[in-house]
Picture 1 (spheres, helix red, strand yellow):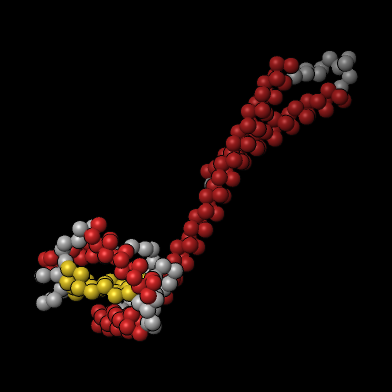
Picture 2 (cartoon, rainbow, N blue to C red):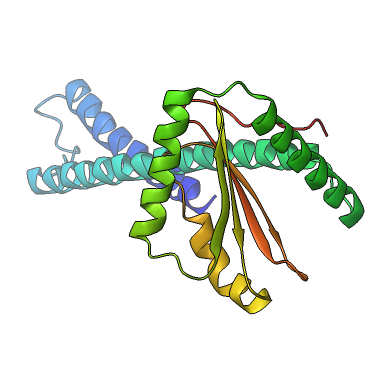
Length: 215
């Protein structure tokens, strides 16, 4: 509002000065050279007024640019607000699960993945290459916090299981276990404590997706 008021004031002053000049020129056109009562505006005064007009025009242009910037900022803020609303709507669409529901969902997901590993007809060539890449990565990372109990690859998925001596070893070594990802792709894992601490990691073959249970 302040910027708009400044713009309006400058424009009004500019208009007043222009009217003075226009009125003076009209008066000079109507007056005769012999009119002794006429006192024309001096050239110095006219130059001063013209200088003020130029200055006011520059200020007007500056204020117009400022107003355009404000409109641009308002449009951007509106667009950002729309994106936040969409994100909020997407988050609201995800149901909140209780601890029991989350545990059941995880159990069903693990069961589905295990069935997929067992039920797939193996791609022998890829299976050998994938298991070799996993073994190589384990050796390169000097993984010592746990032992690889099992590595099993089929056609589009691999299952890795890491066993740990106790929960302290699990805490220190689970992060290293989850780094065993020789190729880019989807993954899913579970970390279990208790008497037999373990990490189970499922890796999708590159270009494939892991099967998912329906919520």
